[in-house]
Figure 1 (cartoon, protein in one colour):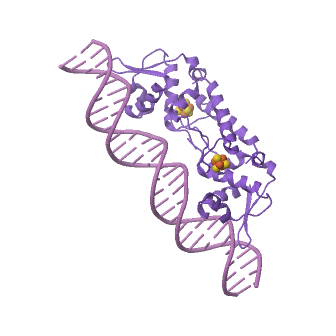
Figure 2 (cartoon, helix red, strand yellow; figure 1 turned 135 degrees about the vertical axis):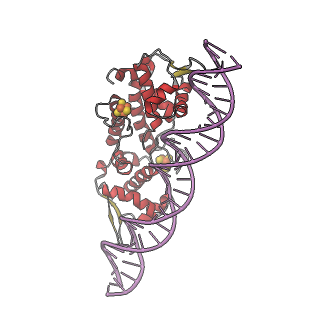
Figure 3 (cartoon, chains in turn red, green, brown, blue; figure 1 turned 60 degrees about the vertical axis):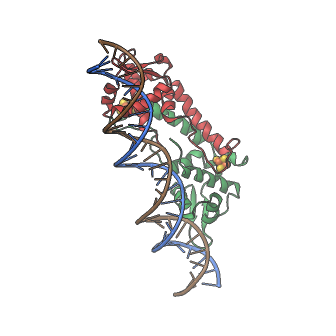
Length: 130
Length: 130
DNA sequence: GATATTGTAGACTCTAATTATCTATAATTA
DNA sequence: TAATTATAGATAATTAGAGTCTACAATATC
Ligand code: SF4
Ligand code: SF4
């Protein structure tokens, strides 16, 4: 069980945008060069952030990505949710109804305490130390 | 990012043993039949629990598995650690030194709050409700 | 000591997810 | 219209997860 690299790239991209003039527009190419990955690949990741309404994209000349929210409103969890999805970390198909299951309940609550922590941590808070 | 099925099987096995006379010896075949998986596959999983000293195995006639600890000492985390390993959920190779990294620090602490929760939850506590 | 029983190690297979890349297309500005 | 920028789609490589099968080692019982 590991976070995907996509989550890593997404977190870094947001951190990068906040760090380098949070109101600027950033081009895909510039951002992708930072990680040495292809622009189309990063695009797929950033498109998830667009769908999550964390950033906005505009095509065409002078286009690029720009933050959609105030930095105080962008938490680690917001980004992670966009790239990792919302499914539970623990699930099973042995019984087909997990509700009322004690094992599931514990695992789910454990997941929730982690997520609450990440929801309360904003990315801008740590950017100044990078 | 999801927990592996091996973790699911491991948790269920321990819960099963606690529920069905915690001092008995259980044969691999009996346990595997519960999940409809091959005995050798479950063996690989249970061997991890043996290495983690949670259960003990004895081969030969009248052999099987038996709990190694008092039920008060077996937490969710103990079992999960055995099957999922101890590596961090979040890691990266972009910078090769993660220590001092702010992103890593947040992600690691988030993971830790989940793990602390799971360390405090003992399996026997929920068995009675299954 | 031979035999039946039980767990383990190793080789191996199958599938699905992750991690990408490349090409083509759509939208926008100048 | 041409240049620029993001996105969708097809596709491929790699890895991790999930599982089986065969052979083997250890133990008890006769
Ligand atoms: S007891 Fe819970 S975790 Fe176990 S098989 Fe049933 S629903 Fe799944
Ligand atoms: S800043 Fe931290 S998470 Fe990002 S690449 Fe460096 S070590 Fe990894």
